[in-house]
Amino acid sequence: MVRKSALVAGAVGGIVAAVGGWSLYQRYATETVPYTVVARLGDVELRRYPELALAETVAPSENEAFGRLFRYIAGGNDGGEDLEMTAPVEVTDPGTKLAMTTPVEMARPTPVGSTTPAEPATSRAESGVRMAFYLPPEYDVDSAPSPTDDDVDLVSVPERTLAVRRFSWRATDDRLARETDRLLATLDAADVPLDGDPFFLGYDAPWTLPPLRRNEVAVQVEASD
Figure 1 (cartoon, one colour):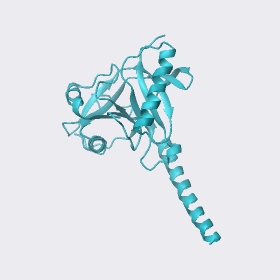
Figure 2 (cartoon, rainbow, N blue to C red):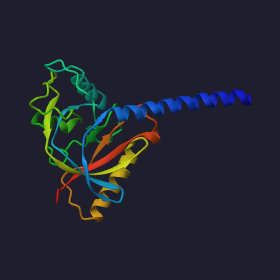
Figure 3 (cartoon, rainbow, N blue to C red):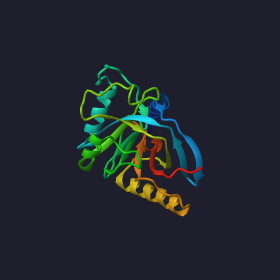
Figure 4 (cartoon, rainbow, N blue to C red):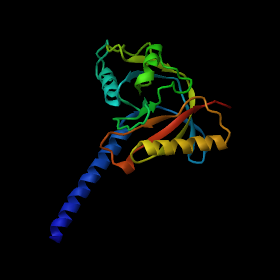
């Protein structure tokens, strides 16, 4: 009986190790949006992001939004091109529970910072989840293939500075609220002026083990020298 239990425990441990290893490989194999850390305030990073292009949509649910965007990068565009998945993914949603293939940015229905979405997405954002995939750096809104789905928009996000706090485990509603409060408290104590609303950045596939997950809460701040 003891030997059987040991064999079961060993098998489970092997599966956990395999899942963890694959999750880490997938993360490192996925291109990440570039940024430069310009300052640190305790466990909060101030990051400077370059101008970026993204594909975004607003849908009644996260699954529907994700499906639209995934179809776009999987060939649902006027060139029939397969675009590489880039991390993170951006999502805006009240009460976010996110399990994405690669980083996703999630925010609430109001525009994130000064990166105002294209007009069609803005008009839809009041009643749904806004989700965006960052496009590979070789694309801008003019060179990227146009979506065949009218509910997917290509948007240019100008250079911006984000304050970011990183955490692991599942991004439950309570944990997101707690981490966001800590982020904002740190910025308030340092008198860092905000330039938008907080949002979520997710970096992992659904099967990623909670201790290995990379989650971030972020908010745009006013840039300074």
